[in-house]
Structure formats: structure tokens, C-alpha cells
Length: 447
Image (cartoon, rainbow, N blue to C red):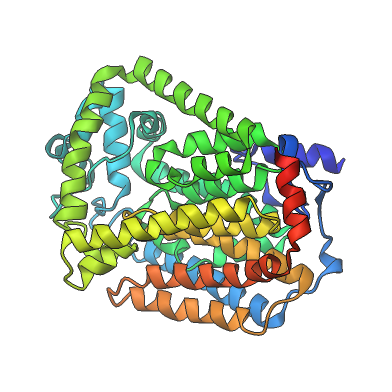
């Protein structure tokens, strides 16, 4: 029976309406799980029954309080008419309006116009019933217009709430699966960025679900892992490190599956929305990059990368790019080496998840929901082997830094670095005690 339920998780994107309690998924143990010639001995998923582990009281209470805070913030915003519609019945300008407007243009037969900031804003203003300063542009590649088109078929409030529900369910399922315990649902809802993502109706939940789903499925369902990764191409900046790591680790089934999925999405969107939509995407991508990364129109404190941190403190664009390139290069080399080592898979996955956030200059605050993925891997390890004395206090420090964000200070980079250090502190002990003979044997088995 457990195998059937495990298989049902592997198709989680087709089961968005399934109750979370039905997900009885299992995760591979801490031993290395390799594909092809690098297959390790143990790859059987193991589900830990609730009675077999004890959740630290401090962790449980903190997650419960944060979860209650997120839910309360959303409820209060809705009841006070500060979410979706204001007290006058007019739509509140948020990021989600660009989804609905782009979908409306696609349904009306003008998908290429979704990338035109001026045209899109006219549709947004008409839908909201009021003008607003600034822009809510559409940055996503044409395949994501399929999602936007479905949302535009619904009334605006239903589409907004429906999008949050449809994207948060797989996110909760993935985090619960990674942790291997129902506590994972509480942990996912406790992420401080959950309320931010829900209030603006952005894509953070979906991005976290696809990254987490890819990492969860690589050892047990490589083809499905590749499909998740292929679908992640709607946010191409988060796919920088995955191909390198997959090649270094010899995960060819994942690599091929992701490539086929990406090509299929390109072909389907080309047939549905025409080549003009892709030409418009590349044309307006230059303008978007200029506005966000050069001119800082999104404001630097809303981005959470080393690039934006340099710009936030007044550094020139060239210096910011230099820091970003150096960091990305270090991450690429370090992750390639880690994924070829005998470090447990859970730590490899956690390192790649944090590296994904660090490697790109464009990390919006709502995408920091992705940080729940490496934290879930760390919590999984801690629940089974015990937490180091500094790990829970360090996660508490993460919460303090996140709170500083509400004072318009870009602390997301510091938060990601803290989680990265926690991952490296766990992985470092494995590297230090790996015998030379074992490393040579592993290298021989790969040849």
C-alpha cells in the first residue's frame, strides 16, 4: 500500500485537490543514491512514523507560532479589505493582476501584447477599476501563459485565491515529503515568506514545489524529477546550476527528461501563442533587465541577491556583477564536487537548493519561500540524528533577519547564507572523514 501512495506523490501536480493527509510518501535514507554506474546500495524510501521521532519542543512551538502568524495576517488582510479588493470594492494593485491581464490578452488572441508594459497596464487598470503608480509587468516565458489563461477564465477574486491554493498544495506536499513526517506541513506553513507570497499572489509556492520536487524525486523517480525541472524553465534564472550538477553526478535520465520537457513546453507554447509571443518575450526581456537590474525600479531592498546587496549600498553595476559572477562560479565548482562526493544525498539536495538562490542576481522576496526546501532537508536530518547545539538558535537568528525585511532592509541574502553555512557544517564532517581508498574506489566505479 505504501508503494501505491509513494507513486501518487510522484504525480503530485495532477493531484492538487487531494487532502494533504493522504500523502504517505517515503524518502530515501541518508546514504548516497546514484543513477546508472554510480548507483548506491540503498535507495529504498523510508517513512518515519510519528511515534518514532520526537519533535523538539522549541522547534514545534516556534513553527506553530509562525504558522498562526501567517494565517492571521492573511485573514486580517482579507477581513480589513486590504487584500484583493479594498473598502470601495476596487481591486488592490498587486503582482497577481499581471497574471490575470496577461491571460486575458492571450485568450483574446494577443499573447505577444502581454509583454508590452503599456498595453498590459491598461488592461490591469481596467480590471482593478483604479490607476496605480509603477508597473506590474509580465516577465514569464510564453509557456506560463497557459496558466495565466486558465486564471483569466475565472472571476478575479476566485482566480487570485484559486491560484494561491493550487500552488500551495504541492508546496506543502513536497515539504512534508522531504521531512518525512506530518510536521513538514507545519514547517512549510511556518515559513515567514508564506504570507508575503499569498498576499501578492506570486509564484513562490510553485517555484519551491518544483525545486523541492526535483530534488526529492531524483534518487527514486528520475524521469519525473526531470519533468519538474523542465517545468521550472518558467523561472529560467533558477536553473543555472542544475544542468552542471546533473552532468557532474551522471544523472542523465533526469537531464534528458528535463530537456525533453522544456522542448515540449516550447513547442506547445509556439503552437498555441505563435512565434510572435517568443519574439516579444526576448525583446521585452532586455527592457525588463534594464529596468530591474540596472535602474533598480523594483527597488534594491526587494531583491535578495549579492548583486542587489552591492547596489543597495551604492556600489556600481560593474562591481555588483563581479561579486555575482565570482559567487556563482564558486557555487558551480563547489556543488559539482559535492555531488560527486560521498556526502549524503540529503545534504547534496539542501546545498543545491540554497545555491539556486545564491547563483542568480534576480531573487525577489516572494521567491525566498524556496528556502523552506533546504531547511526541510536539515530538519529531516536533525529529527533522525539529532540537532547540533547551534542549529536551532541559528534558525532563530534567521527569523530575526527576516523581520528586518519589513524595515525595507534586504536581509534575504544573509538568511540564505546562514542556511548555507548550516548545510556546509553538516557536509564538512563527511568530507573530512572520507578515506582516500573509498574516494578512489568511488572514482573507479564511475569509470
